[in-house]
Amino acid sequence: MRFMLKSVTAMSVCGALALLPAMSWAEDPVPVTVDGGTLNFEGSVITAACALSSGSAVQNINMGQARAASLATAGTTLATGKTFTISLEDCDNSTFKNVAVTFSGTVDADDASGLATGVNGGSGSAQNLSIRIFDEAGSQVKLNEASGNTALRAGSNTLNFTAKYHTEKGSVTAGDASAVATYTLTYS
Image (cartoon, rainbow, N blue to C red; front, top):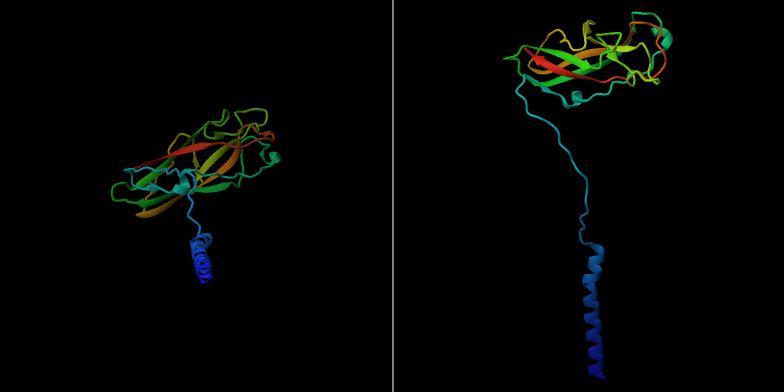
């Protein structure tokens, strides 16, 4: 009987010890690896006087709403507009002293210096309306023509512009008044 009792006790102790690794496993789960996502890094190395700030590469400028009645008269440019900036970083002005900006896009049929607005002149587009771009001094920057030169400072530079609705014909109609422009920088 003693032999049996010792065997049962020994088996109980061994059984309890066998459970210890299982109990510790429940407290410390085995690491699991699952698929995550994708990171697409975009950029380039250039030989220009400045690097374009990443926030200036793609911008959304919300023009908001304008009343058609404010654009009823031919030759009207709204007094207020939406400002935007082009930020340049790490500028070295030892070689190039100036920068000019050239804006491009779909030219308005009635305003050769302004951007066409709306969805290709479709029925949902505001009619007789363009967007003009002005520099910091208030001078218009015509599409496909370089702006005036801006002197570069070593380090960071901010180029300030304003976009304003304009009508050559007047009688602007309600509708989509968005546009897309691209720009290039010319250092001299």
